[in-house]
Image (tube, rainbow, N blue to C red; front, side):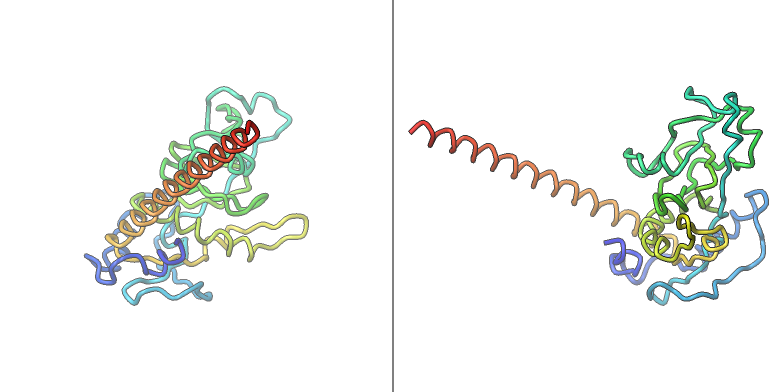
Length: 249
């Protein structure tokens, strides 16, 4: 389903607006992020698949800032707390995450001292967090301002209107990114790799349609799974009842 969506097979080919409108919106928002590179960057690598002619491919760094993370010295107890503080994520938190596409906490928080003691950059709500090692490819949208450790290469979209689109695209791209990771002790993807990884950019209207189609279809899949589970439970109950009835004969 995700593959069809990002190949443009689930949306009308003739969308309202153009890809130039989408690129102009990104460019307008891009200067609002401190430290953003305002230069024009194009992707020179190979592309994963073909997309409609009305779309364009761009490296991720063209649609958002790719942000790593950091960990304060772990031997200092005053840098960490289990009580709410500065939200800080590790890949282990992502592995255990079962609360949908949004995430708002990990197992531990950073204290103010811990946050100051490391270079973990604050990312605003709407950022798309992506675990880049141990394991690679867990994705979520930040429901609040948060930080991560160094096991992430997250994307802060220049236009937060693209958060859902970037989220679903990275869900789709995760297996391919994992397959291209390198490392001896454990596989990892670098910030440079993620910055250059290609993302298709459709017109703004088409982006919204893709997100809507994906989430509508996933909802239908969930409903189908629930119906199948109810059917299986009913069949099991019938089989048990028949077994008891026959044993009484």
